[in-house]
Length: 109
Length: 115
Image (cartoon, rainbow over all chains, first blue to last red; front, side, top):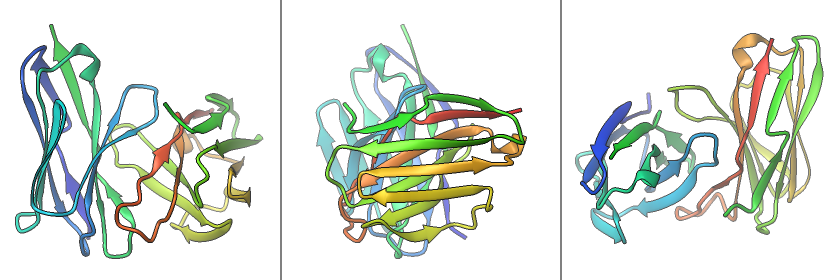
């Protein structure tokens, strides 16, 4: 079966760095997405990786290793507004998104 | 910012009621999606419409009935639901589901409670 694993919850301190991991086992691979979802709001697109390596976008970076079936989202200089759930999703060989259950990130002052 | 709107935002209904959820996208996209989001579970894809044609129906019970009258509007008709159907129902749209870089844009969801 297809499976996406990510930690259920993480806690970090304002101003610090946090890494949210995602491992996947899917039927084929056409890219990996990260979304941010604040409580009671719509998921919003953060990043897309299809090649191995690190993609940087401001305070957020996303890394992919296809051989290891592994990705992480790195958040730097954490702000209170970064408190949210972070969803990992893989596009499989049928171009269907397979979603993880999300990681709830709690930022403490 | 979101170009996808959903109404109502909250809905409480009894098991014998009939109600409808509405989604509208203002992004000029060709595809629209219904997802179910339950606490601590992955998003569950329910239905996909591409150019108004239903292309996916992931074994969803018949008490959920989708309708897509045009590329900008999507409805989910609900009848005789069960308490376990209580969840957040998310609508999304995208330009081209056949393209790897296709990004889905989500609405804020309808929080449904079935009593």
